[in-house]
Image (cartoon, rainbow, N blue to C red; front, side):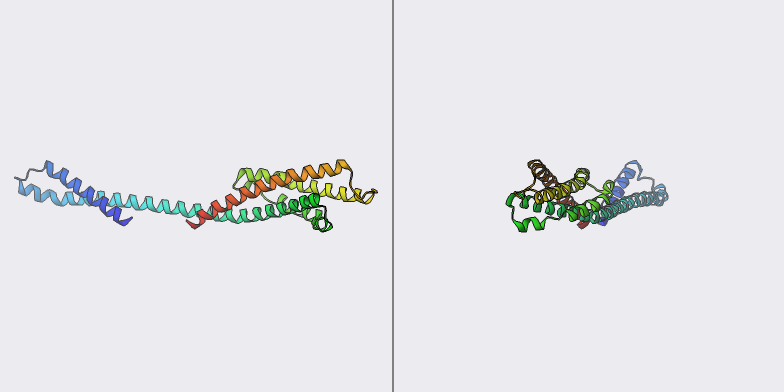
Length: 208
């Protein structure tokens, strides 16, 4: 930056000197001697103004970069929390899907309606207006209530299984859980992708 300022200042000084020389009658030596100090002072003042302006512009640019980095650091901290909740939601839906598709006893034991509701409460406590990515905020608005719904459907299916001869829920309850969990899983996957992209974007700004 200093090299640019010096080069620019030298060019301005040279240009002013050439312009002045074009209007000076060199036959009038006494007059030349009398005006040279004034011209030097004028040129110096102009250069000082130019240099001060360039330094000020550079300082403003630096301050803006610092402010941008501070905002990115704050947003990145928020996004790490958001992404962690999305990962938990995605894991919960994968567990539901695995239990439905495989039907193993161990898979059913992994599903936790309590954790779904706990995650939903955590999402509800987020300030969605502070999330940098707008589409991600919309996804979270859908994920929270959906976790509550899937938890309720799961409990209904488990309850119905205890009171039927074949130990299975009703067709309607099963289909509702099956379709609902697929839809929520897709939303969670899309939200995870958006959250990861946003985290990477903010991390790049912080490293600048």
